[in-house]
Length: 295
Length: 323
Picture (tube, chains in turn cyan, purple):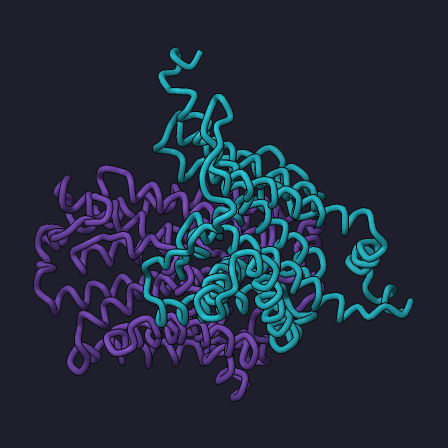
């Protein structure tokens, strides 16, 4: 079969893996966007910039404080998440009740400021971030060599995504969250601090983006433009999946990563645009997105 | 939608239109004498970008649709008209028409897709589609990738107007700008424009009154795309090149910035915003480097938080006029 298609199985599985890795990042980022959208009803255009900050946070933790990858995996999302909470408290909250387009413009402006500042101080070229020593090397699966770190990224992202799904859909805290999305005033009347929940939700969504940034740091280099490069694809993923469903954004993220990877094998010219083409088709057939509810 | 729409409030004088006409005479007079005082290349650049911003504002200010991918129309039209003038050797007027036609066609396709969703989704869809056009322009053979199309001939307009003469070229660009501006002004103040505003204010209500909102939105989208294309095509002819800069995402972001800074939903706001932003890039760009991005981002934040009506919107509000 492989001979017929004119590609080696090795090549196919390599690209599938690359696709899965990108899919992990799409899933983490679109999941964060969905969580934020559900609670705050805004599209966070600064998501890419905060993903980039996660990667830089890992870089600084290592090079300034000597804290390795494992610390960064915990600390970077916390630090960047706290920064997100600050943004929500100081800036985004002022726009509550206005047309959501204003918060979109505000977060877009923030993305420009953050990216511009990092570009000023660190230039456009990438900074290397070493792979953690425990995860270097590769293992032979029989049909392909699997670099251990890449396997780790896919498994760990999947675990984080499904934990988030469990947290929101199956726990009491998640129930409050979903209730506050539906009717914030009523939930407040029950004595639940909804404004604080909004801040924490925003911080959590940002934390997921920062986590994706830390995971990406050893694979791609740490670059100021890394967020801007990925964000338009993530938006297309969000449009395809529809922002109504948590599980939907996870599945769509991974699936589109894989499709992108396969396109690199079979028709490389289209690998940059395949996600956008799929978006166009989904809009024609199911305008609300594959998992979306019509508003 | 129950939220207030992103536009200046309608003042008591809104329908008299006298202030707008006075402002038009002043603007035209200033632009006629400007090349004697200011570097014409900068003026032509600013005029093209201002027309681009006005076209964008037609959509965001009067239909309430925020496009985050408008650079695709500017960029595609500039490539097509540059190619038509250089490779096909067309008359500059025909080359510009070819550019406008290409962006109008692209507007029909992308508009039909994008208006299937509203609000923030509309912004994300237009952004994604424009990324697709960017990759197309990066890889298609006729655009020459990173090099772009260089040394496009300015040529003889209609065989007798020599556009390589800088003075004539300037007044040609000015004429194109004023034409586009008046088309937009006329559209906004027509029954068609009133229906667009009705859709912006309350789409379900407009639909219940029997207006096919989707058709009106698509028509406005295509008109906006065609005028953005006119700006891009003219830019390619006067600047004698077409490059990836005009089709990049940063250009889509800049046009949002100009319109927000000048005043969304005001007729003169985008012109003011475009001149400020282009001047900032032209004259401060060399000193500021990457700080330009930081400053642009800060302007977004300040505008959204402190003066959402933009410069012209605030002035008009202060004097209780409509501009």
